[in-house]
Image (cartoon, rainbow, N blue to C red; front, side, top):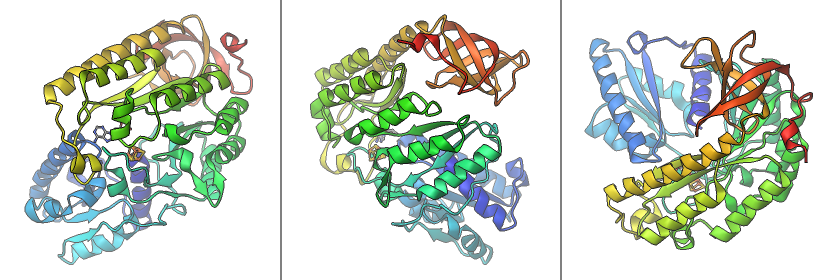
Amino acid sequence: MNFADSEIVNSILMEHGNHPVDTPEQADIILVNTCSIRDNAEAKIWNRLKFFRSVKRQNRDLTVGVLGCMAERVRERFLEKEKLVDLVVGPDAYREIPNLLAEVEDGRKAVNVILSLEETYADITPVRRGGNGVTAFISIMRGCDNMCSFCVVPFTRGRERSRAMHSIVDELRMLSDQGYREVTLLGQNVNSYNDEGTRFAELMYQASLVDPEMRIRFSTSHPKDFPDELLHVIREQKNLCNYIHIPAQSGNNEVLRRMRRPYTREQYLTLLDRMREIIPGVTLSTDIITGFCGETEQEHQDTLSLMETVRYEMAYLFAYSERERTLAHRKFEDDVPQHLKQQRLQEIIDVQRAGALERNRDEIGRRHLVLAENQSKRSADKLSGRTDTNKVVIFDRKDFKPGDYVEVVIQDATSATLFGEGIQVSSIREFEPEWLQV
Ligand code: 5AD
Ligand code: SF4
């Protein structure tokens, strides 16, 4: 989401006569887009800002600013205590950046962290620099109203609001014209997308019609309100990817209750069964927080057993990190010792790896339609791409190039990556995976 936000900021800056440079030393303005979700995300930013302070010593005219969630959270400390930055801009105030830069030029410190009920930046066309020209993101909504007890996002990004469907569809069309082959629609909870009564399943359907050879993904879905209609649309439309990110956070009902996640383990598992039943071959991923306030060994075991039951294709696993202002910070004690959080995290990682490895080994021998994205990091002779189901595949470059849909036969697998051989260039419309025929 920050990636998408930075593209909006690029656009605003370039509209106002700025242009990008390649190194911090060449810059007159450096803006750091920040995340507050866990303490380690913030720690990285503090280090980065200290580095920029050293750059500033060489260039007195340099303006350094902080954007995004941390701006809202720790503005005083940025400006007054640590004097690291000149400019602090919250996630709903990016349009003000040119004015705020002018204030800085006049010798003032400039701050705008006001959150908005309406801002969606719908009319700003993001400037996508440094991407691969194949895959892109579109933010379809901002903010979050869910108030999970551990999460700072509702405080830093404000109330939930949806961007108008027509502006999303227009941007999809533009991306298709520019040759993009895959777009991920982003929101904290896309299931609550609501453009004056138009819901997410309809948006996905309309998105699928823009270009039958452009893949559409989405993230993130909250288990509390995932409609069957959306599953049917994904099943019917070939260019809607068969991959769902559906964070459980925990496998224990008491922990879910403390987390203010309004579903039970049983309801969650029923939903996942329905996903697998309606969309054959669908892959699933989750987010899990381990060591949340009061988590007992038994509660942790329930999360492990959830992971064993589901065997997610992918998972994003985190140790709980207490955030100020959240309900958990006010009401509960962060009482699982750090070493135990880390130990439980490792156990969860191990279970996840084992499950994903098994699932990936099942792929050996199957043909997949892989969208080639980049040269592989390890070898210039290889390309890296992803299956419709969001699995990374590495294969010999041959004459294939980024942006091609390549039919690939899978030959080997680790828990995180598939390896295969590219057979021929194909297309979404032509490709029929034989292993999915039932
Ligand atoms: N500590 C650890 N992980 C968190 N997440 C959100 N807040 C916290 C926190 N305080 C995780 C959740 C969420 C993902 C984006 O980040 O799992 O789904
Ligand atoms: Fe945070 Fe919960 Fe909203 Fe996700 S749904 S952003 S975890 S409050």
